[in-house]
Length: 357
Image (cartoon, rainbow, N blue to C red):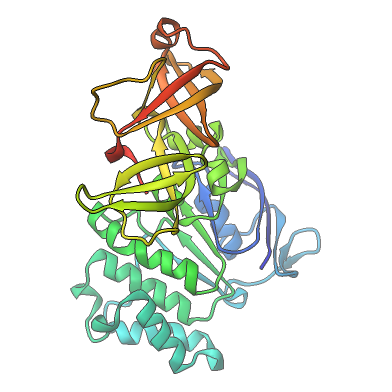
């Protein structure tokens, strides 16, 4: 699957001038509120007609301003999941799903219904009305309805934004199954680094309607552009590793990243399972000698590869720890007191409980 998007559009004092490509899986449009994410996904959907640009899916020209091609929304066969589930309140879950399958025409088969219901874990909800569902359950039904319309492309505009942390934790595993099993390319809008780090294969960072970075998730989420999009609190790095061992006594899992082993809270995954670790720069300490008698379980030897001073008196220090690049945010006072500079050997110290996976 290949998706090409180019969009040029002015909305009052705000303008979008963005382009990106995707080759399947989940592509995340990532950035702060007001960066243009929803406007861009609405242009892809056909809900907004841009001043200029084009949308091409697998060689099929969906829209092209120069050729004066603009395929109406109902003929694009794109599924759309909004922040709110938008289920029909007078219909049962089963009837809401059937409505989606109706749009698929002859391609919507009973087997598809069974597969989608099983994948999203909503079989026990079929006879309920939307008012009897939790927020996470409603979103799973909304996703199922979109899938049963047999879309060529699935668009998801911050589908977890209206949910609390417990409901987000409930639905994220189903989104992972959707990514891995459904075989439908997805464009996923979010301003949450934890969602994007967990779900996306490719990330497009938007700021003020422009693309600031684009590429593989692990690469992009570790760049300064992603730090601008996430804000100082969540800025950090995304590491890709594999499960090495489990410590059942202490409920810990050891993950190999490059040449280093990192201990994290227990993960229910087999040895060799690939996974990602997000480490916020605010959770990393640096030492010029190996510390002793501390509670942090991860003390990684490395070499400083870059220091970048911020406008707020902070410094981002990037450390190469045997192929795993760790970012630490410290004060200029600490930088000067430790005499940190490019090429200097240091130890990066990370609490296991601070690592998201």
